Length: 199
Image 1: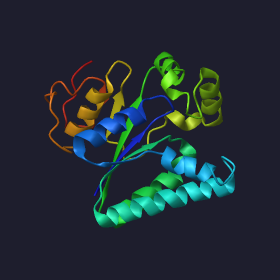
Image 2: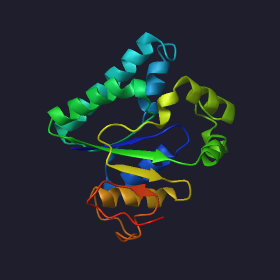
Image 3: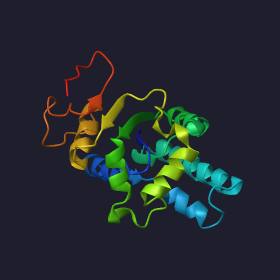
Image 4: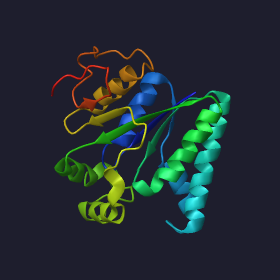
């Protein structure tokens, strides 16, 4: 079982990219709002009961999926305070013989603000520049990198399907059509010894 763990601040295109990765690989899409919306239907958003239930739902889902060999694409808004939860999710997956593949998405500030205000986000909790600024002020670690992240992609000027192909190619998750290994490099960072083309 593989868990593609896409993370980044609101508006970085996580869900759009996750849908493409799921389409290319056949992995199940398990985006963060599946658990967030369920918990919020029962408890006040951000309350201790809410947070505990969100973590419970995710832990249960990851354990069952890993045990059954069901690979997932997951989206997550990470900040430094999330590290204990992320470590727990990773431990659950790895205990069942699965592998967590961390992918950090980012984009330039002006692109992030334009995306958040896009009409396609009007049903989401954060759908305006003001809400985004408030959220980032509340969680200043939103641009931090999860330890163990192997791939970071600046998708400011890259289409979601291209980003998804980069992810799939990098982790050898399938055989997506379209991009050669050379074409998959723009906007990505990877550890040595993999070669990185200049942007």
